[in-house]
Length: 76
Image (cartoon, rainbow, N blue to C red; front, side, top):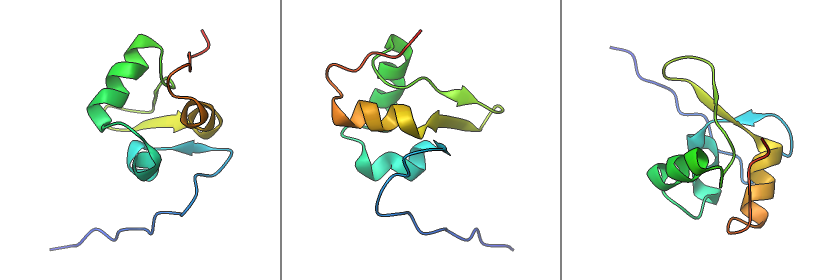
């Protein structure tokens, strides 16, 4: 039986690149489900799907959302 090795989560969210929800979860003021709902409504960064089970978010957009989650609107 193999064990998954957990990589340490950084103390800050990188300014560039892509992150999965688990990587920025501790910075998020909402739950995973609420973030998904906000994302569908355009009030949180849009997901970038790389497969059925692989979803990433742009770190630049996440920083904008985290700075002002109430007034954030995803760019169309």
